[in-house]
Length: 360
Image (cartoon, rainbow, N blue to C red; front, side, top):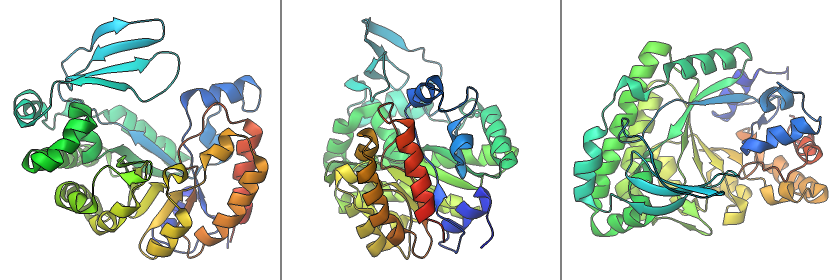
């Protein structure tokens, strides 16, 4: 088969149609590129996508913080961390010296009353929530390089917990489901309304990439029944809108979310990413269960990349790619993202061997 462009390849992979090879994409921690440029592995001014030949490009262009006019307040600062209160009423501690998930210290919203008075009135589909220029430039950039272009952003689960924290949100699912249902409906409607404004003015992307971390090690954050009752309606609302425009939907979720997958597939996702092995996910098992309905992206154990274990990488790629490439529907990606501990030569081997095994 003749070589395809990234636009052609990813478009067909998401439909599980024949392609020339599996797809290729990756996420990196912020300093990884700097390290590889510093050691001369990648030229200054060259990005990862160009250097490795990635097939797709994403753009995150919505601001979903509740109060857009609120100026973050610094409560405490040390040499290593800074504690701030943001426009969601959340008090978070962030590390200054490295990228990491912020520590959740406190939240103004712990239940329905605070949601209705402090947050919901701010959630209007205002144009200032959209970075039109960033989207326009990213779309042009991807088109010029024949890469499949995704609008990227979070969905309802990842929009709720920044205003209440996981603990209050999950307790609310059990004790006040109507509150959570109202948050889901509000955020789903806001997301769709903002997409309508953006796409009418700047044109549609090639696809949609939702980030939605709904699991941790060996467990999802909620039961499958609770997902279907409370979260799935928001997923279905947003995904139905995207499908109505002819746009395929990738959904990212860290953690063990396999018990939620039947509901996620019913909600309409076209591809699951990132399939976190260390959390208990198994891409081969998921391929067997859902491969006729779902494309996959990821599922390659990042611990082997962090350890720079070439033998383990060779073994994993040889075991997984011949199965995952069957019937098309696979994009090579780690099961998380690539940190600075990974050597350039290690990731270069991962890509080259993956593409060798993944060519049809």
